[in-house]
Image (cartoon, rainbow, N blue to C red):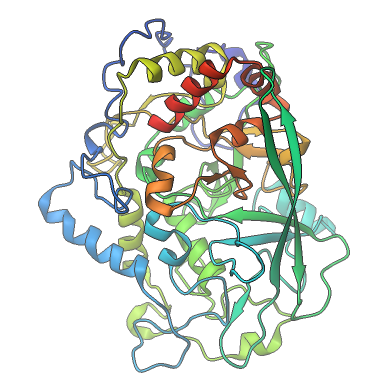
Length: 487
């Protein structure tokens, strides 16, 4: 465990001060799996058949009487919203601007999205974030107090929507172009990476702000979110090292983001830059930004339409008295959040395989665990739901921000995160992406076609680990990848 001295500069706005954890026993035996390692979600881990539905199973320790909530939440997650007014008030209010008509359209089978496959494919599971630098003292105050994560473009807001309801114009069309980048490994193997360029074309509401910053985002997989939420703040903050006090070259730091639920800054842990503090707040933000649906924290029926988009704000909405004067009321959001929290992690495959264990040793010895923290014990207090309470879990993430180098930089800040920083993504389930989603495209924008390409894009704080992998003999590299894909 890293030293407690680093915590002087860690997240000062979190209500509870970070405490130092008892020292962890360092893994030294790679001859067999560790206790509990085959159950990455603890007792919530499911053992269902490996098929396209493997990411869509409920927590295995869920009581029978709670299963109906999961199923109803799944129904709302899959709901296709329509424009208002409609014959039913339960499903109208789409847009007027949107990226998808349902949560499931982006998170297909609760898995990972992908970039558009050429000009003829839409970008339904990918979009561009947009914001501008602070322009006024008020902008700077809001950012300094963590009341906003970004300053919106005055016309296009903080997210570009590529669909619109009838009678309205979409904001843009996403275009992606790739430049091949051959990389020669130490053993002579050549891996061709693809360097993306993103442009917002066919702008529907005039030019972007001259200082607009764009960032591509692919929809991430959904499994294990409730377990990540149940990790104690102090256990995440204990691993923060913003000044690299231990000299290992890794300087993870927490994001600080505004929590509408707490009406105060909180630790960010969801989204590619840890821009949301909870599953519920992340879900409500997606309903508004992605689908244009009003929620308790975002009550306006026009979704993300800005003041400059006058006709968009005048369009009929689906806010209804029977749904808390919203389109997705508090009961709907509670069910969706329950569903999202309880998407179970599948059991490990081949955890005891000799090649997998050899890859695990390399993963540890190379220093990958400096960011991809293997395991935690979730909180045991009564505020945590029974499915997530007091579980030994293996997500392989520290949920902290890390400088990943210029190659992955988007140049766009979010909360505390700067334009080179990204949250360490959890690795559990990564090897099943081809089964669920039919592709193996990784990183925040899906540029990497496979685990090796994802590793070779690492830079900044992970440059040493990237270079170590590039220098490995082919057999070691294959073992490392086999381990990651077994998670």
